[in-house]
Image (tube, rainbow, N blue to C red; front, side, top):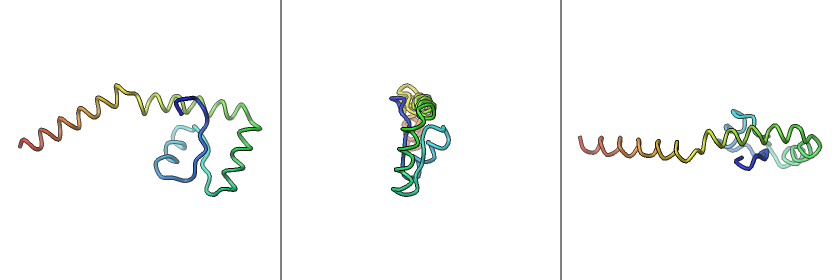
Length: 85
């Protein structure tokens, strides 16, 4: 995603949810559909570019180090405060 390339994935829980939510790739229910998705992106470079761009935006939103560090810090503070009570 961060590389700006479209994602093709099997129907895994979180991965397929992210792909669908951010329109950054294609989800395959089996190996035949996976192969069809590869061919589809190979033949439709504009679609591949669009999905890749969306993936880059998703990666910036979901995996920003500052945001992740802030969330982790809040969780640690909450856990410490809960234990101190």
